[in-house]
Amino acid sequence: MADVNLASSSDVVIESRESIETGNEAFEPAFKKQRKEESNAEKTKNADERLETRLGGILCCSVCLDLPSSAVYQCSNGHLSCVGCFNHLLADARMRDETATCPNCRTEISKTLSSRNLAVEKAVSELPAQCRYCSNEYSRNTVEKHEKELCEERTTMCKFSRIGCQWRGPFHEVVVHESVCVHPHRSGGELMEYLLNMDGNHQEEKKLYGTLFDLLSFEKIAFSDVQLKPYRTDEFIHKLYYETSRFYAFSHQWVIKARINADQKDPTQSSERGISYQLILKSKATSPITLYFLMLRGPFGEMQVQPKIYHFEFSESNCESPLVAFPLTDSAECNKVLSGKAINCRFVYNAIDMGL
Image 1 (cartoon, helix red, strand yellow):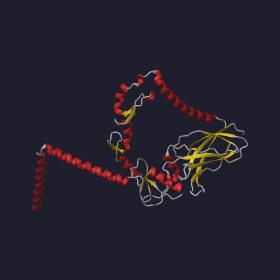
Image 2 (cartoon, helix red, strand yellow):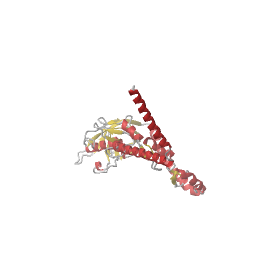
Image 3 (cartoon, helix red, strand yellow):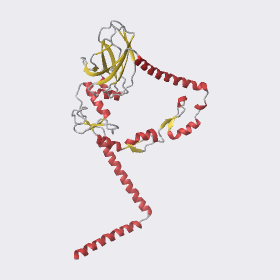
Image 4 (cartoon, helix red, strand yellow):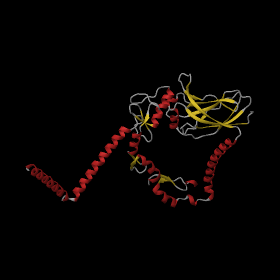
């Protein structure tokens, strides 16, 4: 009985204390409440910023030390690298004829030994990133859309840019500019210069597509799905090159050979990389052979290409075409291609004016 009375009395004391505290808060001045709320909000904000900073340091790429913007790979010990740096490490090792290793622990890395870290990719996508136009913060998975479509400060062009207006400015000013833009009021003679330039660019595109369709309409046209495999030269500095097996077309045998940064003595010293290739006739030509050819992505390839058509006349004394650019979009795409074991592509070609 005494215990029950003691418990009930303690409950009364606690309730009275809570009522006193509540009463004290109720009678606090408004400015004091506001200051306390602002202080709590500031503490929460600082805690969030510290957490984001710590996570950014933990989840960053171990090579470039930036937060990854796409895929994240990890070595067998868990060290992270973004897809660009991962491909660059593999490409460097390929060019130097070495084993690619993690820059942190020196364990071997490859596309089979390393794995994607999806948890890190999702965590990074939720971290805040600053808009490059308005400097406001958004989650990384939404900031790109904000910069392209929603930001009022994003750089945009005047709608009269097609007739020569060079104005570029923030999106919220475009309406004011277009209302006073002088280009809609120019004379026909002044606008003709810009229209002729547009026509010239349009004709170049039309010529490219026309040449492609003409190529597909030729009687003697073929394609081969080829695989360029890596080899080494016998020079003092063993340069990397790629070569296909011999393939048969138009009663002749052919080989494709590719080089990295063809004009550079040591391609491993350059961060900007490109591939050039040439078509080589391996059998004897009894008469001149004019060949039109282009390189496309193969059915099992992942490279991004910008195809271009080349042509060359092969003969008994001239059986190697000049080196032409492999149709990759940029240096990062080149590293991606070099990081693989081989280059899979589709080679399209047609023969004209041949004595076949």
